[in-house]
Image 1: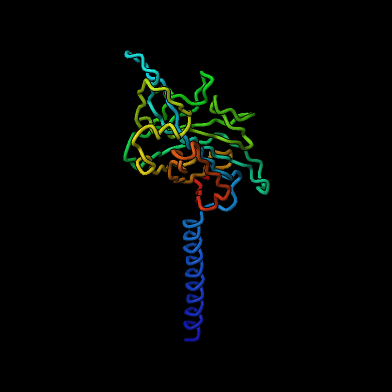
Image 2: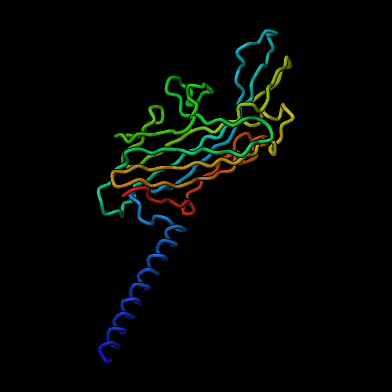
Length: 248
């Protein structure tokens, strides 16, 4: 009888330990789901968005108008990836990828994503050869170079352009003073409300240790470009963006 009682107590202790261990695992999983990685070898430390607009000469101008422009609204998005100096392993970036782009629909226009232009003096051009259809990859290198789609293996900046390429056009023979910025849109009936949309995408950091993925959401344009010409967002607190590892 006494032996049975001892065995029951031992079994109860074992079950209690298992329940506690299981509870700890569940709590850790819930914390990870909500907070993600806390000690990555590289972190997203800054997001900069520069919003403006420009007029691009149309390919054809049969009437020889003084002004015959397609108006493009653009948002240049810069992402700074920085090395975590407190990370205790020798880590380096193999590549940084942008994936799973999605948009809400602006009231006017159509949104497209462009990679930097590697063939001209302009950093970006509205050429279909530079459209991002699914994924944009920056490969790890000795130094960062946007035109060659490279990021320093020890951290650097990547960028791309989210553009509304169908805002409207400006066709006129009048002697207008036109600035190549957001004020050009004031020559149309388009308002800021017509231009607003949301973009989201995954930022994937591939390191020699493992791969980390986080999702970024932005509202574009980032300010009143019609009145001010250019607007800029500079976000240095990226702690709200949750990263999780994809493999070990």
